[in-house]
Every structure is written in C-alpha cells, then in structure tokens.
Length: 76
Image (cartoon, rainbow, N blue to C red; front, side, top):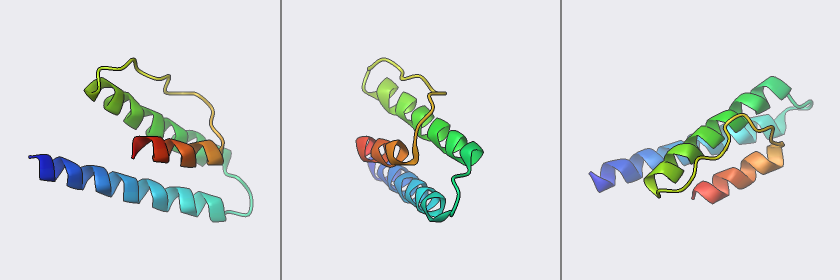
C-alpha cells in the first residue's frame, strides 16, 4: 500500500509541475487558471495537513505563480 501511495504522490507532483511549467510559459498570466491551480495545491495541502494532524490551510487564498511553485516544494 505504501508503494501505491508513493506512486500517487509522485504522479501528483509530476502533474503539478507540468501545469505550473505551462502557466510559466504563457506570455500573459491567465488569472483564472492561476487561481484554480493555487486552489488545487492548497486543497492538496489540506489533505497532507490532515494526514500529519495539522490545521487545515485556507483553500481560496490568492497566490502568485512563484508562490504556487513554492507550495509544490513544501508538499515534497
């Protein structure tokens, strides 16, 4: 079971990185896409916080693209 969960986490990190890379390459920031991606990352943090018995972070906090990249590093 641990291997399966590790595989899922690795896939999630890979997919998040691909989306953030695509957002980074846009000539203009797509605010709605950034808002949704920030929400996805924060919701992932909620689940990781629950696993670790920590308080839930807010899930609709506005984030910059750089902060989204930082959030993926916190998850790792």
